[in-house]
Image (cartoon, rainbow, N blue to C red; front, side, top):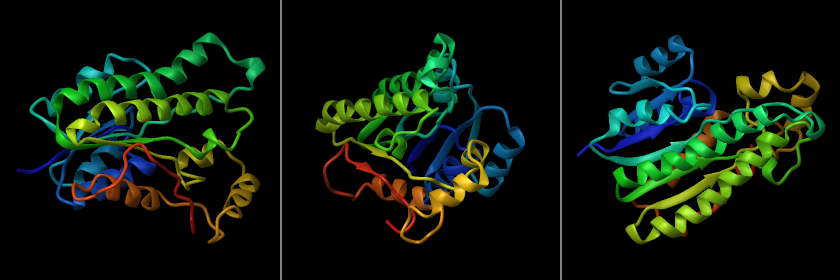
Length: 234
């Protein structure tokens, strides 16, 4: 039986690389996108059998659309969406807080809750976080805090779902060359980030996808809830 994977935010960047890697491994992949249908269609064209679902993760009602194509069972869930709402602490509003926490923590948690009823025993869950939960990022408190909360969701879910053979892991990428990174950093900041890696370059989406592919392999053994932090050359 073909296994089914659900990946949130799969039309670009890290999410797209994950979708393509899982599809190439033979999984049927359902992925969400927010608004760029052309990008989503391009991924579908590259990944035969893939299904694109429009879902705005700042609204919990997106869960119904997200799970509709996988109602008959699920093997892999990857919570990849990451919403950055730039703000210094003094400038944070309640609305900003709610948007970031909904997209980066609440919806992933509810996706795990709903997905756990669909996941077959031995299934795999991977939550994409950020190295900025341990490396402070001034001006990005909402992103850092909401992803840190997601890491605690990972830890608890791993303990609760472990008896069914379901592993739950966090992958926390370093600076990865995506349009999201470039939209929020200057050329000078990107160059500095590249110096943090042993290879002297930014990470690539495929670097992260390779880690996710490993963590979603059924034959993989080891402790769940570990945090992997792929950075170029590390």
